[in-house]
Length: 85
Picture 1: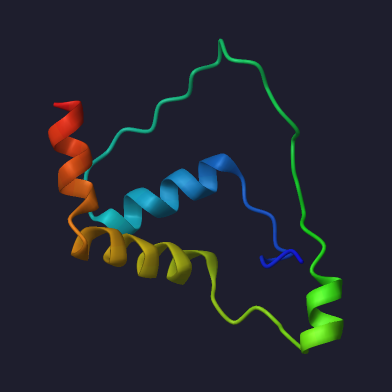
Picture 2: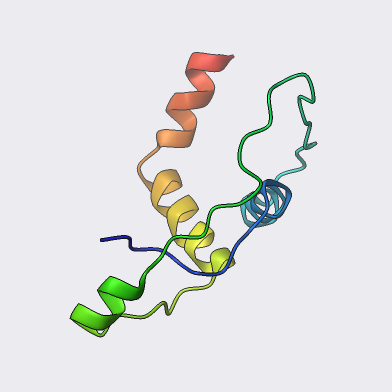
């Protein structure tokens, strides 16, 4: 079963939300030389709604905020920066 949100978000919106949540000054850069994939994908969550009476309660920004805090609290961001610097 797909567990997601029927609301679509662009890569730009995702990137801007991550930058906002992180509180960091990050310049978003796009590599226009790469191939473009599907313009959008919308998961069908009808099955999980029907079978489990499930529905989305978390906004994109809140979900990214919760995830970012979890990653930060587990020092995963620090570990990534250590490997890339």
